[in-house]
Length: 272
Image (cartoon, rainbow, N blue to C red; front, side, top):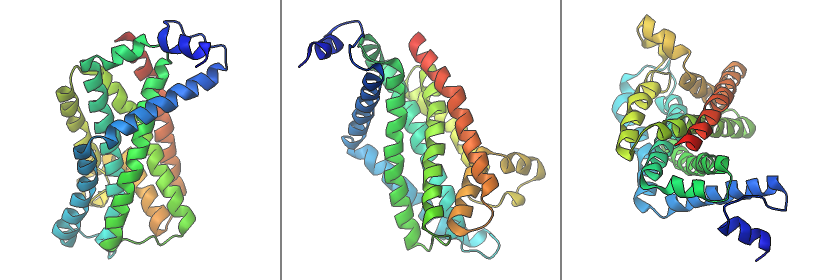
């Protein structure tokens, strides 16, 4: 073990003789792996994350699908992009908010702050780890969707672009969730806060029903919701149709969320 490594692991100062950017990337990667391992070592968490999209797809397809008019299209084709975005939000928002709040309450974040490592790496590692979870959940969601009748009708490249856009949007929301997790004082409070905004945010959108069926005042919000932009972008990329406007809106929302809430979360983490 080199002297630089010893100073890094045991000292209170963080002045490595090597490339500072390389150390930062190392910190981010180690924190990401740490959070991924934590998820994989929690079988109940993995099981719940994978069962939830299956439950939503089957319930909406076979219980509500016959009562919802989507213009002659199979409801599974309409539904699946909405479920994908919803599951990305549940994983990124609920997982990040509750995880950060729990670690703050247990004192683990204080331990991280006392270590010679980048403070931004702690939160970036947390948010990046949610991308890995979203990849797994998206794979299960697509598998079940294919079984109930969903199909990629627009080619391979647009389908891959849609999945990358999904991961970007989920990652952006995880920064908002990280900030919420730093504001609350316990995992229980984080769970309650997450439920307050995530259910209306996902339901008042085009995820499950066309926005044109909503009352005028509600349709005005739903039509301009970032959730609707993301869902419509995935529908256009997966099934076909004008996609450019929805894709640009989703990218703009994602970049805006990261630009606003990443600095706020890092600042809040440093002050707690």
